[in-house]
Structures are given as C-alpha cells and as structure tokens.
Image (cartoon, rainbow, N blue to C red; front, side, top):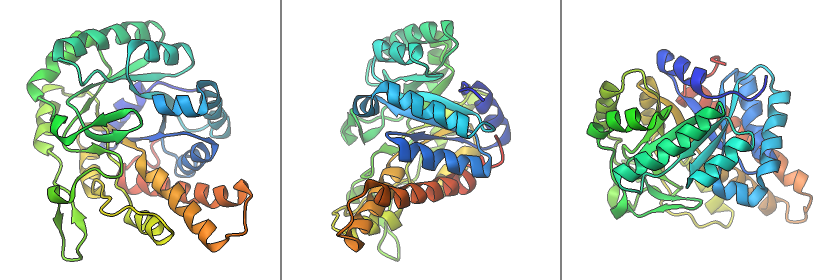
Length: 322
C-alpha cells in the first residue's frame, strides 16, 4: 500500500491501548531491519527522518528507501514522518517532498510564539493532506541538532494543552514527562542504583500524562526520548573498544504503561544506533581482516530487526495491529 498518514493508526492505537513505534532511519540497513520486523509481526509503522538525517543521507534517497519499504511490505501501513522539524521551511519541504506527517518543534519558544509557528505549519500541511505533530514542554538531552540542557528542560503544563491544541489544530502532541533524548539521558546523580549496581532513572511523570489525557480525551499523545538503551548493546560496545559508562534509558515497563494510556506514538532512536554500533564493533574485533561492508552490515541489520521485533511485541503492544 502507499504511504499513509498517522490518523487511522492513532485512532486504533488509542482505542486499543497500544502505541505505534516511530523509528528514526538514516540508511538502507536500518530501514530494512525495521520494516522486516514489522512485516513479520504485522505491526503498523512510522519511519521518521530528522533534519540531521536529511543532511546526511539526502531527502530523496531517504524518501525512495521508505517507498521501497512500502513495496516490500505491502500489507502493513507505513507513515513517513519528519522528526523535530525546526521551522516552517523544513516542514514545507517535507510536505512538498512526499512525507505524510511532519513535526514542528517550536517548544523552545514562548507559548504564544509556539502556537503561531505551529498553526502556520498546520495550515500548510492540512492543505496538502499531511498531518502535524507539535510539542509542548522541553526534553533534555541531545538528538542530532536538538540539544537541551537539564536546566533548560521543562515538564509540559497540563493547563496549557487545551488552548494549544484548539488554537493550532495540530493532530498529535508530544509532551515532556521525564523522558530524554540520546543514550545519556540522565546523570548518575539523577539515578539510584539497584541491588546489582545498575543505574535506575527517576520514574516518568504519569501524573502529568494522566492530567493531559483528561483535558484532551481521545487525543493522541507522543513520547520522544524513549529509547531504553539496552544494556546488552552498551556492554557489547564497551567490551569491543567503546567507552559508554553509565548510559541509561527509560525502563521498558514504564513505556508499556504509557502505551496503555493515551500515548499513541513512542519514538525510538538510540537503541537502533547502539545495536548497529555494538554489532559492528564486535564484528571487527572478531574479524580484523574483514573489509566488505556487506559482511558487517548484515549482522547489524539482523540485530536491529530482532530489537525492533521485541519493541513491537513486548513494549509497544502493536504486533498484529496492522
């Protein structure tokens, strides 16, 4: 089937108590690993592209890779989404260039300015049959060009969401409830250590999510910065020459709980990068004489596929929902 918007996906997810996985893509192997996993478990899918990915791989290449995925996986709905669009011009370029969903992230702006910028994007996108995700509240961490210090982050204020959605007309809303971008989401000082000495991050603010849900009944909520930072891949990286001490993510059980509430889209990025990097590091450590990219990218793609299958089945709950 051709690329779709997220409208029907989110309606089914909200009613069904699950979330759709939104996975950032940068190259062919990542696209293949994600889509093969979704095809095997019959799950809807959002493939998303950041400004940084467009600069790295080129807009046209990425669109064509995703279009190829729709041909190879004709029975699952796939949306192509712009992640963290920084301005109207970037969003317009993606609307004009074949995306079915865009995010305008004006969350760092004052409330009134966020509304103004978001509304402009919504009007243009809706005129072209494209849906829009907006953001209220600011997540800490680093993801491509999105860099926010812990001091500058802020939780979403539930009392603002009704006015924001009504005035902008956005189709979904990303909120800040304690998730964070990147593989280093929290400092050691923010965490506690369990009996095994593993860092445990502070719990998500489900009270904020629940209040937002009460104020926006039936409205799809989005979580960014929701990678779990699988420790097996952190260990794999560190055992093969890497240095990633104290990389910690969002516990999967908390994400599963969010998916049973009003969260219809959960963004996953760093987990895939860790799987690819760890696999490639291990491959070269075990096969120092190898040089063919096909040889080391093949197991990396396979590990991404298995990781995504786990997320779709056990964390997001969207397997069998295509």
